[in-house]
Length: 166
Image 1 (spheres, rainbow, N blue to C red):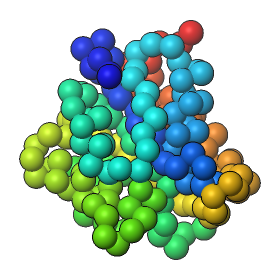
Image 2 (image 1 turned 180 degrees about the vertical axis):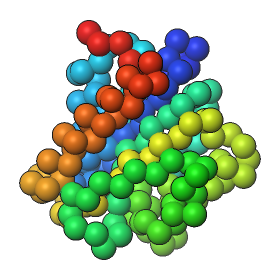
Image 3 (image 1 turned 90 degrees about the vertical axis):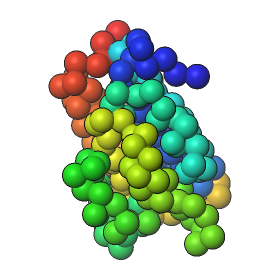
């Protein structure tokens, strides 16, 4: 598991590694792992939103990355800070919430807020997805957005003084 005593910030990449653009959260987590060796916990998570609450336990700050479906252009980047932007959270369909019968990411974060278990600083990056067919590759717009989000997350962590370069 992760050690928040050593690493006060946790980055969680969410997604399905076999479903094209829906793999973006996990790809971002892998890219960040290659760039940074210490100062932050980087976790690749699947698509079970309730697991996120467990993965957030003990973190002082956290950054979540997931694909969104909001009708915006493919590759559009959204950044939300919780609790400030809580009212906007449900305006997006997060890819980890692919079924109407499933407890989604937004639901999990709302529950975490109610239970007061979320980190003090929680940032959520979403990238509007395009293709999600199993076995497909990333769309060009999402691929470009991934590089931008990796850069933005690295910068945020440096500002939080949580990441040490190799």
